[in-house]
Length: 215
Image (cartoon, rainbow, N blue to C red):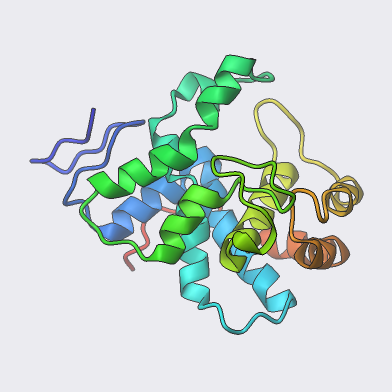
């Protein structure tokens, strides 16, 4: 199912209209899960700044964070918003979203850069090689993707969800240190753990959602 190609209307959990303006596409995706993508785009830039990574374009990094979960457009709402832990079958369904995200970008009439496509596909890869969908390891995962992966986790843990309360900063710092060299790039994870209060404080000024990126 897709949006209405004639009117530009876009139903929830459907493919976007092919001719939808890019700012509207990004806005729709970034606003999912109460603005999760919006916050990930912000946090990714903060991480790059803290790590003094100058060679990655900040606008590209921001966009990558905003649209990383594009594939969740095609995951049923009752799974994404379940107020409980997911079943094994539901987890398997959710784990399809990186590949579904690539499918959405192929459908939608816009040429995304390799950095954006890599992020959509690889943001659940793990430094130790146990992630999905490709099982990539270490520096085979692009640095930009490794940054977005950390930003994704920080927001997911620090934000309130229907099935959990937000984690405290000390709890999240402990988790980042535990997963350094496992789920996450050890250098970047250490920076995020050490600077987490600063990162979390920076998130307070971000609106929950936004209505337009075109302005």
